[in-house]
Length: 405
Ligand code: ARG
Image (cartoon, rainbow, N blue to C red):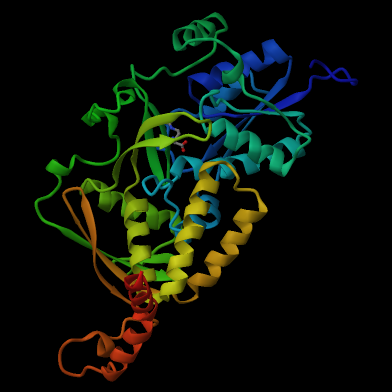
């Protein structure tokens, strides 16, 4: 890999976060592969950074640097579909890191195509899921683009990376010794490494970055009313909000009650079990509320089948198969189920817990006349005996037959 026929250097589009790894990668890709680097920073709802990372990428040798704000697209094209599917990996982790990867891959591929770049590079290490999500996402969209994973290739420790940066005058912002590896976006915060690697050790308070400790949360419960239209949340406490604002608002509310902390030992796609903590305040409340509204508005057989499809959906998101026919087909199924998932859900937040305490819908299938044990009962009691006779008939028949033996 070197200069091409016209004598200019080939190009690589680098998924750039402004952190140590990808800052070093700008230089390393030039040294090792003799490539021109186009750095692309994609905003998926990370906390705002005070320095201009795009300008810094240029100072560090990128020939071009771009900033893509993908928050709205993230919510509308990735988060809401996953909410309709109640996607929760292994029934524990709303796959917040995972679902942002295809969102990031898309503009990387588009920019690589526009810039006629031969390669895309990302800073994922060789032991994780994210490299799979990036690589498989890229080949699914454009199999002609080569992929470079600097972190999979170099053998530098963190200290050596810092040395390398100093030797090459790379401007870096080294955060105070943070013992954890953290990934953040609108749908959640992931945290691993350090003491968390001992699965028996309780996550120290310092591992949590968004939520207040449940013990320090207000002594008074707070209620939040979420309105959904066709499976998509549209208002919080009566206030209509766009998707990004709605998630941010729910995050604020749930965080102050310590809601959304998750501690999990999960199965990575690459066969390793790993311990990670998550903070998914808005996701926790929204998935809970959405499921409650589905229990009110969907028929039993749909709920049962959907559960199986939901599990498959969460695995597929986790395993990096977003850009595929199965996910598209499952989305079509999920959309059909959401036709009547419209209404309001009331959630009570209190010292780390969230609980659905009320739900209503113009399409509610809950019929008080059928359910009540009080006056006004409309259920046809006479039908019960006939139904039970038929329902129990196989067991009655078997019991008789087995007794004869
Ligand atoms: N284990 C999660 C996943 O694979 C999060 C990975 C990123 N975590 C991190 N702390 N850097 O989806």
